[in-house]
Structures are given as structure tokens and as C-alpha cells.
Length: 231
Image 1 (cartoon, rainbow, N blue to C red):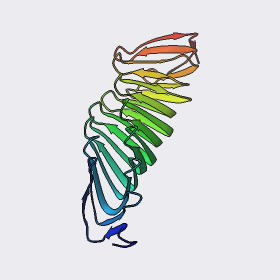
Image 2 (image 1 turned 180 degrees about the horizontal axis):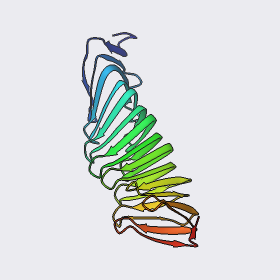
Image 3 (image 1 turned 135 degrees about the horizontal axis):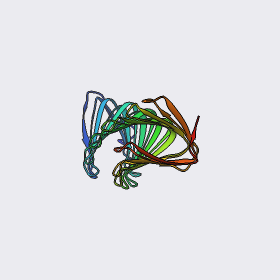
Image 4 (image 1 turned 60 degrees about the vertical axis):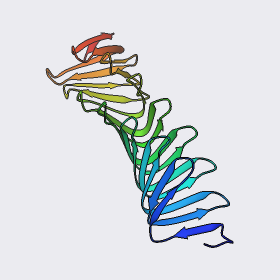
């Protein structure tokens, strides 16, 4: 204990519990009573009992007054309520907004729907059940054998709809390859559609087509398009 009792340090491991539902285990603790900032290192495990969030990392800081959590180095997060898991180099979590930003080699898995997303950055809006992934984005629907590669994706978890922004490549059943602009993927109706110029490669008959817009019924493997040209 230093600084007239305001700074408390622990070096041999332990557990800290707050009156707002946070429980943290770590090897090293540093708590500043004046700023209410708790810094922890080495094998850190934080449980937010009010938000049903588990965070593991090598470094975690909790700013109690701001209700903000920062985690760094080999970060693993589990939304225990919705069974969504996130891995990243670092994260910022606002308890007030119930919103999480993950950076650096990010992967997020919706275990219930078997949706996996890789990106440089992901924003997880837990309150509104929305995931936004940016830069070097790849989405895999493991149940349906569908892959989307693009620069930005918005996944509306509650509505089961996915929207891409910008140049997008979609691989369906390893049979159909769509090169398009922004498109949407409705996981309930199992439809893929875009109003932008698209190149379709049909790997089953080596066909290649150009379309001004399209709607593809995935389960029926039925394509409806405009201005279709064989190329």
C-alpha cells in the first residue's frame, strides 16, 4: 500500500470483487482508490455478472467510474447469454452502452448459428444484437457452406440478415462464385441478392455470366437476374 493508502498492489495472485457485479482473478493487482482504476496482469479472468460476459487476457484494466473495460494480449471473450465468442489482440468494452470493440486478428463465432467472422476490427453491439466487421473481412456460414469475402459486413443477429458494403465475393456450396458489389444474405429465407453489377461463375458447367442485378434462392439453386450476358 503506497501513496497514503490510495494505491494498493498485490503480487501473489488473488481475486477482486466490486459492488457493480465485476469479479476479477489475476496474478498481479494494482488499484488506485482515488481514480477507481483497477489494473491487473498475468492470467486475468474477468466476469461481468450483470452483463453475462467472461473476458480472459494477459492484461485487463477496469475503470469503475466510467464503467469501461480494456483488455490486451491474447484476449478471449464469451457472451454467456448468446453463446458468442470473440478472440482478439485487444478490446474495449463499454458497460454503459453494452458495446464492445475488438482490434487485431479478430474472430467472432456465433456458436448457435454456426457463423464465423474474421476481420481486423469488429464492433459487437450486444444490446441491439448487431455485429459490424471492418477490413479484410471473411464470413463463413458453417451450416450452409457459404463464404463471403469483403471489406465490411453488418450481421443483424436478431433478424438473421447479413449486409456487405463494397466489393464482395460470395462462394456458395463451393459450386457458385459471385463477384459483386454490396449484397445481402437473408439467412431465414436463404436468399442472396445484389442490385450491383455481378459476375457469376458456375463451377458445375464452367459457365460465366454477367448480370446487372440478381437474386439467388440458395436452397433451390435458382437464379433470377437482369441484363444477363454469357461471357
